[in-house]
Length: 607
Ligand code: ADP
Ligand code: ZN
Image 1: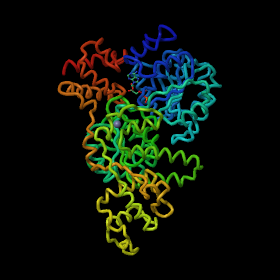
Image 2: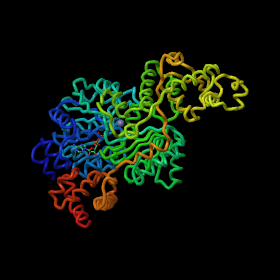
Image 3: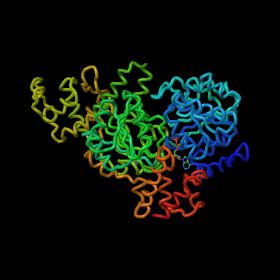
């Protein structure tokens, strides 16, 4: 029997936070959200990934009379959420098609008895007659709509079945609804309110900063080599490598495997069984690298993802932020790396131009892509640039991105830009970067000779930069809008109106000096849960990890469902020697102490 809830129909959230979740206190706006929903109010909660959204509906579900119904888009991921709830001693279940009749009957009877505390369900199932009938006469504590940005037709995660959730308020009057998302853009925020009929919902908007995530952006040179160097610093850690195409996913995963790295592919074309198996392996095993397209990630709540790499440029700053946001949910240090090159920019711009979308949508998409390119090219703090895009002003540089740790140099590129522009003009603005660089460097290629470009005054005037230097310069000119790419004529570069003042000598251009590709990776040795511990604590941490592995295997759940790394790290440094000292460790609630307390204390004593 759950003592903490049996005493009264409405339990105290502070007490449950401590006793059930083992947490010392609320974080950020959690207390306000919980109080508002406890009092029956509707809420829209915008918090970054890892901000602690789940608690905002878990606590009121448990503390308010009745069952909390959680709408979540991916059935496959509900299982781990339910497993995590059960580890805390909470009676939670998920409805899905794979359930046996016996399991279904159990849920029905728990619903009728009022002993079920949380019920997870996919949106399409929630609105089905037989499910609504199942809820008939059942007391409902609240509806939580997770990943609420799925209602937004502007976003990349649009799910038509989310639109049906608009009727919840009418079908269940008086039951509070709480919509949650980590998507930061304004359009999604407004659409959530409108499309879910949450007119009177109070908005809770948290800072979107993720201070434990380190950002680094590096020009793409030899992607696989750059990736391998990065992974060397992350041996034994879990992480995601995003690629644009299914082919790159397959090839990259194979190359990593060949290099002895535990890596698996994930994309939409994989056999569904294999895909599910790989996702499962990533969620439950430790130290696995998942190479994936963006088909992977939504709703993934693995807390110990230590890195996210983008081998190709994402389509917008929003997408970049959401994807990198999957790292470090547990609040421990995590690292991201984005590789980008001119090809990526050309490809992304092209994709928008050719999308066939209405002009106003294209305009929005272009500005979201440009925001990301701005972050890539900035010579100052990346985090400041990112947060500024989301409307947050950060007074100081963050100290935890590549430009802060290893300040970028800028140089006066005015003369070089004018040489490049002149090469474009003199060749009739009909050629792409490769040929223009040949002209500037004075290369005697067949193409040069065929077009008599060796006779141009610009031929060979650019030997102050090498090929890489010029290609960086062209890329930065494209990003700044001085030059545009004509997709109709095979990527020929053309000057824009912005180029004129530069050509006329009225404006100077300061550009970021490219670093050697390897140097930025070299400075980026992150401290992780493990590397921050030393000597005896490190040894104890490993012993606790081994024990956690055993417990997880026995119960067939992911290791993090038993304990987070952060909990193990706290045990390893504080070395509790009694149940009451154990209770002070974050993540150690009553049920976990009952179940594992003795085992943990034994490991500490033996170390
Ligand atoms: P989100 O759903 O917003 O991405 P989660 O709800 O999964 O985030 O929480 C992220 C992590 O933060 C989890 O590991 C969770 O245990 C932890 N967490 C949440 N609230 C608190 C809190 N008040 N104190 C300490 N840790 C917390
Ligand atoms: Zn910074």
